[in-house]
Amino acid sequence: MREAGTGVLGLFGGTFDPPHIGHLRLAIEAREALDLAEICFVPAGNPPLRDAPQAAAGHRLAMVERAIAGLPGFSVDPGEVLEAAKPSYTVATLERQRRLHGPARPLVVLLGADAFSRLEAWQRWRELFGLAHIAVATRPGHELSVGSGNTTLDNEYLARQGTAADLAAAPAGRIIPFAITALEISATAIRERLARGGNARHLVPDAVLDYIDSHPLYRNPHGH
Ligand code: ATP
Image (cartoon, rainbow, N blue to C red; front, side, top):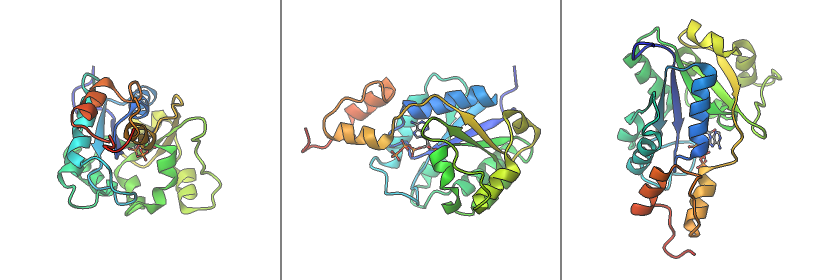
């Protein structure tokens, strides 16, 4: 047994509008494949690189809390949601997490391959590598499309690529690909399904669906 607060900490950011089974499988499989001590979900307050989320930040935080309830080692960081008036930048979240956990604890940001391929658009993106490792989940149809050395991100990847065993050896700086079960689920498709009166059971955890139904969220009052 590790002491609480030691071992590699995974940080999983997303809009989570709503959180779904694809997100949970990514986190569970990352924990196993990368031997992570804990995983902390970080719902984005106000994500700057995409359209505004449909559900308010407080609802998305509440849904993530319900999605991870009962999963050992999983927690949620409400920091970006509490500051949702400002744009959410991962680099700022990592600076805060780094202050919380000290300079030595290995931190690893978990990303899907689609999110990783757009990393160069992120604020101060090259500073991310000084703050944390990055683990990139690949699945059939969502493979890593870097490695040719043609872009700055490619070159970072070539210089930093490693394996799960490298994570515990340094606090930050490696890029680790890992394969997960292919689940072709997206929050966009779930929102569309709900808006037309469809059923999303087993695409999202039951506790999340109950939350969606009881508020209600995503339902189009003029739909069906
Ligand atoms: P949207 O459809 O609204 O863009 P999304 O389903 O892609 O949402 P996000 O909250 O934007 O979800 O994604 C958070 C992270 O989860 C990203 O790193 C993304 O690559 C990853 N992710 C999303 N869906 C899946 C999935 N089905 N399997 C594995 N990873 C996923």
